[in-house]
Amino acid sequence: METAHFDLHNYRQLLKDYLLTNDETALYQAEQFSRLSVKHNISPEEMIQIHIEALQDLYPDLPREIKDSLYFLLEAMISYGLALQENQFLREKQSKLESEISVAADMQKTLLSTVKPVIKGLDIGAISVPASTMNGDYYHFVTNKEDQLGIALADVIGKGIPAALAMSMIKYSMDSFTESYQEPKMILENLNRVVERNVDPSMFITMFYGLYNPKTETFSYASAGHEPCFYYHAKQQEFEEIHAPGLVLGVKDDTKYQQFSRKIDEGDCLVLLTDGVTECRLGDHFIEREQILKVIQSYIHLPAQEAVEKVFRHFEALQDFQLRDDFTLLIIKKEV
Image (cartoon, rainbow, N blue to C red):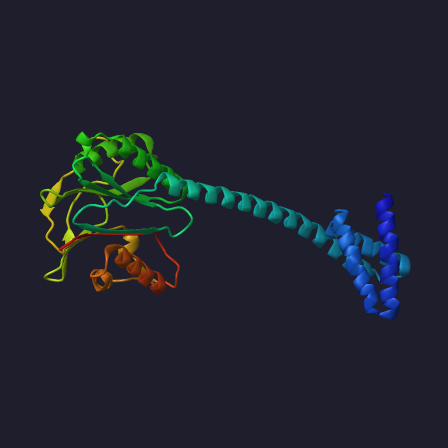
């Protein structure tokens, strides 16, 4: 091929000049030759072949060992070239996948976005931070004509795009329920049937749903295998675990859920969270629950939104800014 002969002629002259003079100018010219070779799509093994032919032309009586070593290098570079092509292909594929995941993550934020409502007598704070690009946690606020506040908190056992799709299904299923289906146990029972019919059996969803009635100042709630939440008694400065047993969503289509209710006193708080909060790690060890509650208590006197943000920043720093799991925390404070 004419280009190859031209390349060989130039390379042979450059090599001869360098071997005779050791002049760095030849090295610079070799660098330019390499750049030109890249433009002509000359592979690394072709470069080695050009070097071998140029060297044999200059020194026909090269020792056999030198020739053999050069052909050994040629075979190695052929394998290197194939591996390099495969690596570049995988990197391009990974880059494309990362781009698609980024788009999916943006869509997830849009699809699952919720507006923090303004409810007279309540101070609400909420934060949800994914450990990776996609968030396997979900929270949602629902209000009705009677100014009741519905609070949904869910965690998919499984991450990534499948988890995001499952969460989107949960959100839009909830949006389709009429106001007659706002009782927590009915919400979970209806969602359980949706999950059981539409989600892969290997993927389960835990969920906590509560409904605050401002007229009676009571909070009704039910849980589908979700992480225990807490009630904070401001006067006693004590946390009480909100006990609500229930099977995770998607196991059996006829699962029934228990509903509980309690009055919310002035100054007290509901602390709703996912296991990304209670299972924070310090190295290889989980942080004790008592320590986690102590951190929450140290900020709970602040406005609710400021409190959840400070709690998150505390545990983020404690874990060297590398979350092991999605972190979601809600604080609902009954104002005095």
